[in-house]
Each structure stands twice: as C-alpha cells, then as structure tokens.
Image (cartoon, rainbow, N blue to C red):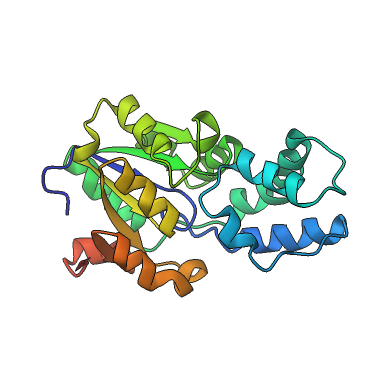
Length: 222
C-alpha cells in the first residue's frame, strides 16, 4: 500500500480518530436548545461539507435561527471542545502505523472538514501534533469534499505529487475527494458509516478495519 508513496494524508474524524459519535450528540443538543426538528436526510446532506458550509446549511434550512455563521460555529465548538480534548481516541493501530511511517520516511498530513480549533485540540491531547507536517481544513479552501481542494492543498504544502499520496477516509464524499485529487484512497471502517460500507468499497482502492491490518498485511485490495 505504501509502495511509491511519499506522503500519507488522513481525514480526521472517523479515519484517524474515533470521533464521529460526537456529532449526533451535538446535533441533538443543538436542535433541542433551539427547538428545531432534525431532518431525516441531515447527515446525507452535510456529508463532506466543511465546518463553515455546514453552518450555512443550518442557517438556510432553519430560518428561525437568527444568528450568524460564526455564532453557529462558536456554539458547536463550545459543545464539542471538551469531548475532543478528553474523550476522543486514535483509531485502532493508528499510533503504531504513524510510527511505522516515520521509520520509512513518509510525510504525514491531515485534510479535514472539521474546524481548526478541534483539530488542534485532539492532536495536542493525543500528543501527535509533531507528526504532521501539514494540516488543512476545508474552511481554508474554496469547497468542501467531494471537491479535491483540501487534499490538493495538503499535498502542495508537503511539496508532494498528489499521485504519490495515500489517503485514509471513512465516508464516500471524502473518498471521492481523494480520488478527485488523483490520490490512492484507503477506506477506513467506522461504526458511524457502517451503513455506507458497500459504497465505500466501490469507491476506494483499499479497505481496512484497523491500521493493524496494514502492518499484518491483511488489508483488502478492492
């Protein structure tokens, strides 16, 4: 999987760290606080959107919210920051995989739809900030996933040809973003996206249940 690869770029939530469980809780608490009804298609609609794009989606969908995009983002940050600092672990085998990659001279980056404050919080909490030579969020580019922008930004910051990058992603629109950037993509198993597993397998080049699969050579070539 790492043959002819100069860099590995991770999506954050659900791919590098086990954090997707946080957001249904935040959605529920936010909706309850503001007397809003959760749309049945909410998660399909916002899949891959940047933090800013998602806030705009909420304002467009719920006219009763008389606040700004920055207000929405700040409230979500307040509701999730402590969880990212204290309750979010790395995915199984991720730390060991990072150590293996460093031994091989692989550069690491992060390309996430999340907000920079939460990225910094969880990387600091897990004591892995120094592992990543480049970190970018979709709020820093023109469009969120499945557009390739955030992955191309990270590859540029790493000074690496996108075709020599391996991406780890847990949702279909994220996988598409990596493929649209002409990168090789490995889908990562995650409980939150389990109903989408078939679609993830269709889109990705590889599939893993944990990062130990790579070290044990049991990953699936699709």
